[in-house]
Image 1 (cartoon, rainbow, N blue to C red):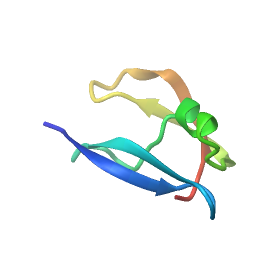
Image 2: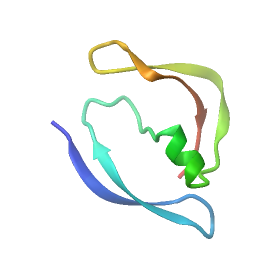
Image 3: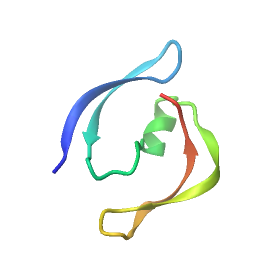
Image 4: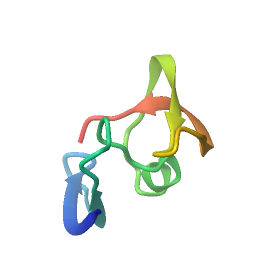
Length: 72
């Protein structure tokens, strides 16, 4: 079961982005799509160690590994 909620994220001091968020109680963290982040000017930083993104069924996510992070 999942729930979608409206969200606002401040991506820079002067820019806020409105979006819909997915609340997933089984997720092991908070995630944002890299294409969405780049399109909306979300500042990204490279991770020291990439993380393999897996789906709920244990298969690797089609977007591949997580290589960047951000602070929102």
